[in-house]
Image 1 (tube, rainbow, N blue to C red):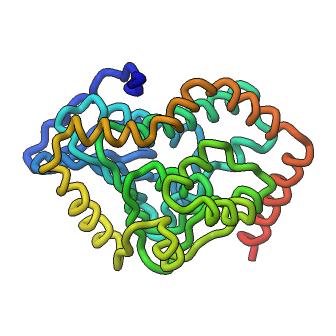
Image 2 (cartoon, helix red, strand yellow):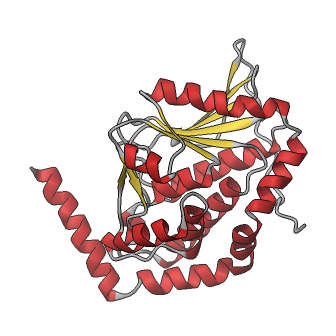
Length: 286
């Protein structure tokens, strides 16, 4: 089997706390990381108000958290959620792609690639507690997790085509791991967003929770079942199932970056992003 596990950064320093919950530094106020010492379940909370738009700094914080958990032998699972009361993540920050600076936009995209590799290929089990709307990149993060629990009356989906953007191959692979090919094709080409109930019916999410607290509780219950499963067997089974997509990314990171840079630099794409930003400003002005 190919070596999916990469060389990771040194483990994060433990903060001495008298309670069962241990706060862990992710070197970013944009990401909160805690560990339940009794269960070994970590919670990673995105904290970039108002909507957790995925800019370079938030992605760097997420990457640091995911890599740190790989180094933490006590980690038995991870819950990904949001500090926002209504949004899980609004997706990629448009300002990272609109009239971008060459060096920053390259770092932005390569960091996103690394976040996907770290989360999609994590050795520990993962759950997305989706406590708000989750379009585009927000949906991608949840699809990287092995299980998805969503609160009611929100929406989720890869809606890139509505913004004049093409979802990359690895975005598509993530969705194809959750729903049937035909449903994915229709959703991706139309940029469809699914309600919580629709997402459950199609298999885009696995459970519905009444609120965030319930989503966290259900996440902990899902992760607890792996206490009785041999961790090496579970990890290798997961990585074998995800082998093709992970291998493609590892072998094509530079190609994928060049495609993105070329695409986002096209005048028609920049015009589409400009129209989208103007629409956002008009909504905010009302």
